[in-house]
Length: 329
Image (cartoon, rainbow, N blue to C red):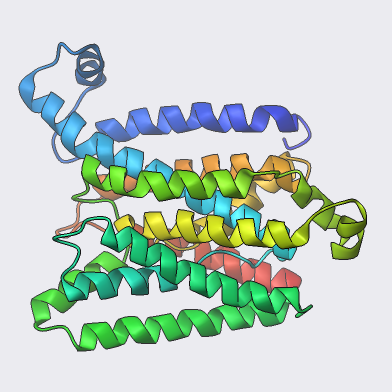
């Protein structure tokens, strides 16, 4: 199958699949919505109740799930290409947990209700600090394995900080609210949440895609990449800023959704000729497809409390992580 697909048609195919997945996801939910209702809604001639459900409940969570998946998939592909390590992923490097820590602190201090942009800003700053620290290790020639272990350490430290905030929560209801938010998900999200994630997320994606072809040279090791004219210092800075802005913005709105950045690049890489520059967009689109399908699946499962997206992606990502560890370590 992989030999039948040309690398330049992988992204268009994934985009078409994303549109189909989003269309199917619009139909999923407790309230029955037909394809005819969706057509009337798109044409502006639908009934009040189906239109309200589609426009104010299902559409924003689908858009947010797709955007979050795209950012995480793209970020994962960029990190793996730069570090030349298949185990690299934003959450494994501590970026997601540090972003969550910054967001949780702002929520705990009560700024999120009065200054809506304080949560994404705090998440981006926290993610930037963690990524810069880890890339400082990479710049000194530290092995990728030690970098991954350092990422686990940073992630554990951020987790301890989050636990401290939960421990200091004024009451059990506040702690439960933060805990449920940390599990990741797009339920009860509206267009305002989409608008909060968009500015930093789009800017982060632009930085990660800027001069993406320079990542191809890293396949031949850093010394060869330098001899070919690649500016690794500028690349490292773009990667740090892109990860911080992109991951920080989506984590601030959706909570921690792990393993998408690990799984998506590996699934598309065989179909893109193993070229990092071709993998970035494709991994982002597949990440979007994964989270849109996960959101639709969550709404179809008859549970008393809606499943969290971070739980679903963990069941998908942990087996992949174990497989990669067995194959590479």
